[in-house]
Amino acid sequence: MELLEAIKMRRSIRAFKPDPVPKEIILELIGVAARAPSGVNSQPWEFFIISGKTLNNVRQAYVEQYRAGIVPNPDVTIPKVGKLAPKLQGVYKERQILLAKQIYDVYGITKENTKALHEYNESMYRFFDAPAILVIVFDRMLSGGWPILDIGSVAQTTALGAQAFGLGTCIMRAIVDFPTELRKQVGIPDSKQIIVGIAIGYPDWNHPVNQLKTEREALEKIVTFREKYQVHSS
Image (cartoon, rainbow, N blue to C red; front, side):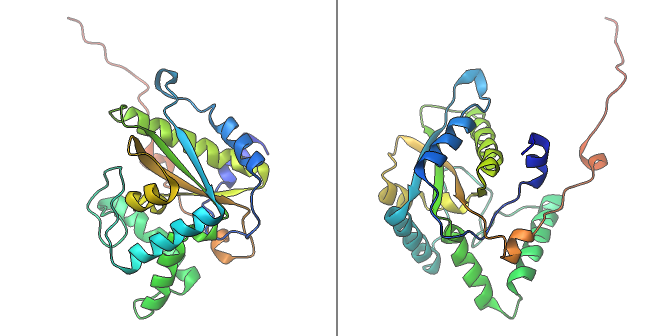
């Protein structure tokens, strides 16, 4: 797959086949993704690969947290949280609402059908039944925003590279919503800050949610050219 094609074709996968992903393929993928750029080549990322019984235990614990009404409390600070989603404003809220409408249409979620909404939220906390998840962490001795930028870089590289193996991914905050449970089930030490998770597996292309294509803003709204510079003499 050509690079530009992979970038254009990438989408968040929210329905996976049950087929396990061989450990060797995941390791090869991470080996490629680890070529991502990082500040002063610090390579702050560390990966936990979770599958099988351990993954089922994490799923069960997360669904129980959701059903109990526990508010998400990820290690990375996020805006004020309602039941699930960050509170955004302005155009960012509009984009969030548009995505929600697209997903709700697929699952038949309406104001009257709250059961469908709860079922979707629980599927999110099952990580869309992906056969494996990746949790990316970095050492707490690191500070400032740059390590998080580096994690974003390696996460995106992982998502793009996965397509070359016929895999799909969904980069998910939900995977790290309950870090206390995640540490308990997976054995992630307190010395590591949990940043983000990635659901990974073979996409179920027969599921309509995987046909969903999210919108992108027109370039004129996000790009500013500065072609001439005014030089001020001292």
